[in-house]
Image 1 (cartoon, rainbow, N blue to C red):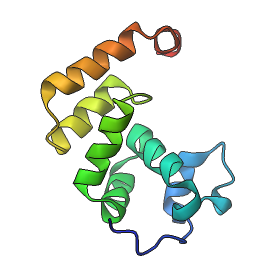
Image 2 (tube, one colour; image 1 turned 120 degrees about the vertical axis):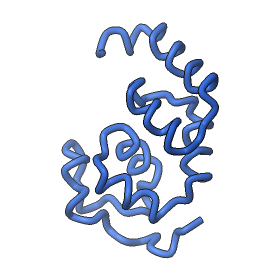
Image 3 (spheres, one colour; image 1 turned 90 degrees about the vertical axis):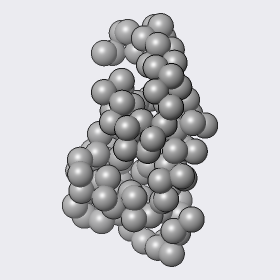
Length: 108
């Protein structure tokens, strides 16, 4: 794991993705899960580049697999599936599960 900057604050250019958090307090060490999930969900190329400098593709893939894609919209799951060479059938399964989730239907 590329965790050399474990106690580093979130770079100012990425704080816009964390509008409902006190971004000054988000650190890699304390808020890793929150940071990774949010950047996977809504991050632009700046976020993708930063995230991939802190986690290997295998670690990002493991994160997605452990969550079964939960919390990430289908288009983003497709993007990450292609970028990380996740099996298409697995991503299809996650997307199908999200579509049957009543909370997802209500908000998307």
